[in-house]
Length: 118
Image: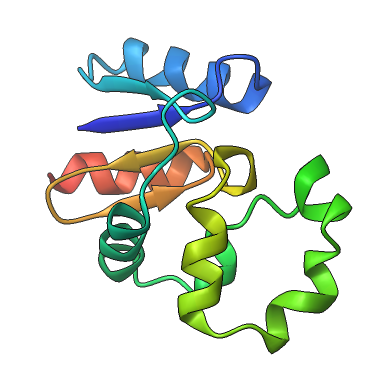
């Protein structure tokens, strides 16, 4: 499993600690140093079954600075994927990616359910 996070983010730290406590081994990737590619984002989005907007870090400084709250609804999916691939800080984190799933943000009950089944 791939755990994509920003090490300074407290939610990411909480998720990492929880994964460790559960004995889940993951490959950790720093989203700021190694931004997800457009291809990765497209694959994860498809596996997640979530609306694309859920992949945006809507509380992030970059999201607000770019005025994306107003711009996203007018952007095509292709434009949104291209934008997400430009800066890891635009991407909702942490991301937990397995063979057939992708979870955005840390919602402990959601993660527990997914990891119990797999």
